[in-house]
Length: 224
Image (cartoon, rainbow, N blue to C red; front, side, top):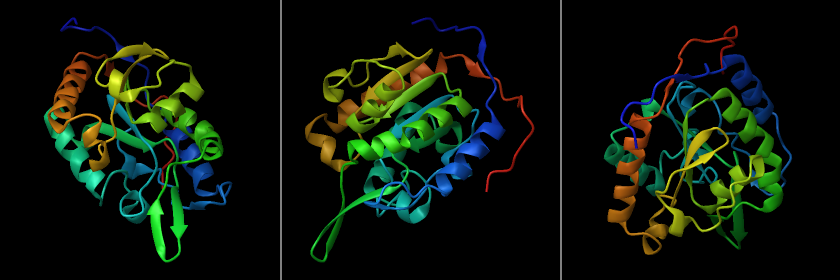
């Protein structure tokens, strides 16, 4: 890969992002969700060079803190992986395929569950609009749910994250990198050392990607 990639991507869009944040906050489409509506300024800068897409807010993580991948084990592990990439949270934008917390209740027990296809479909337009406002040239899909959500927006044909992890490919005018989810449960699918190596690769790809133009091409609408 070339070490010098000329050019810049288009500017981020504040107004577009404020609009999708407002629409997400008012959404009550999915009855099986704990409504968390995790989308806003805490997700990261719109001019980020890396857009990270996870599965859904976890009940001990973003559903509680309001910040993607903050407050649970997956968040702690993602911070270590970001460190391996040479990036930090102030340089990336993090969102999820589904923006509320899918829960399963079994008697007195409550746990996270995999989002349903109908829930992915309901949030698909929000993800597509968010990506329109965040023109990051590199997209990291964390796990199969994130990869499936991106396939709804524009087909990529990828279905096996473990086999494709860390391998960049052109997608929708960007570079897409499939990665295993940082949950401790994925350790059996891809070792921690392999995941660290994957993220080092992510850092190199981001370093060589076009820079996002930080200027704003629309009037600023504050995100609340």
